Image 1 (tube, rainbow, N blue to C red):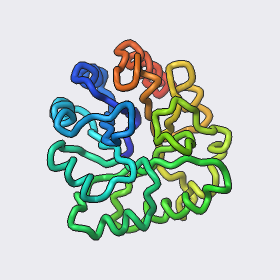
Image 2 (cartoon, rainbow, N blue to C red):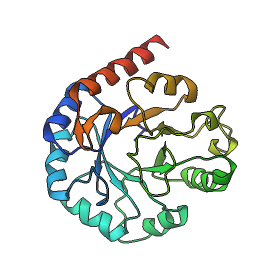
Image 3 (tube, rainbow, N blue to C red):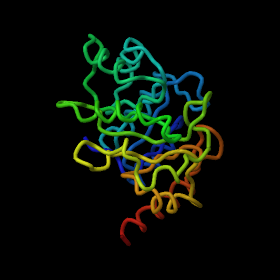
Image 4 (cartoon, one colour):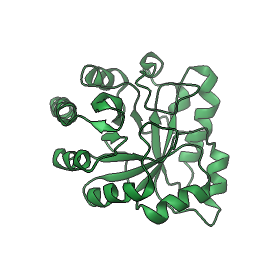
Length: 233
């Protein structure tokens, strides 16, 4: 499974999922972090997941969850991929892979980048990504926030991402796949694509009326802008 080009995250309503299906969005995110304003209970997420089944990648967002907690969600709500959005380490993932709870689902790892202070963290994760049989399909570069784990509406520091820092290159010198996240909306998404050249983008607050409540017109406008940009390249 490859990294999606266009991912919308933080869904709580069936009508918003239905609109994503109409727009042929590549992936939707369901947030299982209870401190998030976009948290969705697993039983309700099950309804959203069933609606999206076969139409787009269904990504479950977890923040510093235990393998058992992830397993409990998966027992209720089917998912196609897992997004780790906390302080998880490559060692944590290695231990998870050896546990009885490992579901063998593709994984996206969300990381921030503040410059050289984060180089060693990125190199460790890139090394994990390059391991044989790794299910880590790519990364999500989000804005740094010491408290909130995503969905802050803050921009990532694009100036640090272009040219691509060496820590984000694989051993052969190629770019590791990542989605750009953090404060993207219709006004800046094309600028972000041009300046950073990510494999894809991830939006939450930029397509909302309020946390968890999506705006169908904003979603459509972003999809149209991104696809027009792709077609013109």
